[in-house]
Length: 327
Image (cartoon, rainbow, N blue to C red):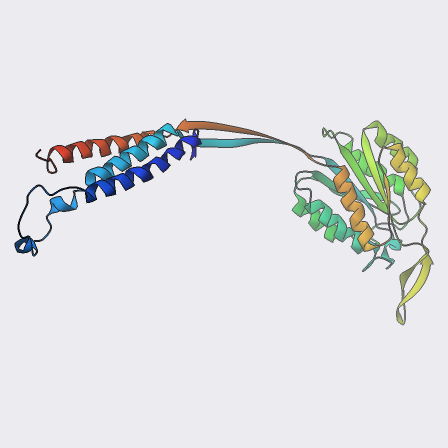
């Protein structure tokens, strides 16, 4: 409950001198009967009328308080919101070629990419998000969905070697475009993550990027891998042996893909940097949220008016009946 005229509540201060005046006045009241000695009356018990002697004053205070509250206009507010959410459709295209097993990111590139992508998905509950994986060929692991629990379960099944080895970046983009081209969302995005150069597939990456541009799809490309060489695990008869292999990321091509589709290119050389990349993309692609607030106020003076009326009525009755004074 709120008060429309809050300044009226300041009148409560005036009750303080009124109470002080009443106390002072009652101390000055002269007895109506003079007696030489009141000792015979010392043992008499107080009657119920004596207990009610100050009731009219208390009732008058109550009535004054209620009138002040009524003048302050107590109101109740019934408010609600209409929320309009304009989400973004996002396809995540992730490289699952065997080179993603390199351990320059921990525990390796593919697992680091999965962990960071999962955090990104959890931070965008209102968006349609899907998953495309590619190596020597490409296919959709999960179509666009707002059921992110299902999507995250699909992420847990990603591993290197589930498709023919190679790096068909163009096919990965084309597959993601197929899922986004008919979308009615105003913003459509592909996040492409790879650690190599295009060496497979029937569609060139730049051709696929041009097609994405025609459908109003932006592509954010992420090159994942350290600079120089990275430790790569090779299984042998004597267990896993590590060999340092050169990191070969076609950054010029990834930049051109991003530029063609009005996106951006990012380089992630560590787990920390990979998280920062996804955080930057998250800031660039914000879901639009329109919230309209409505409120309806109702006057709530009725209870206070009833209490004031009853207090005044009871005071009048007491003063003219059981507490009536004879002049």
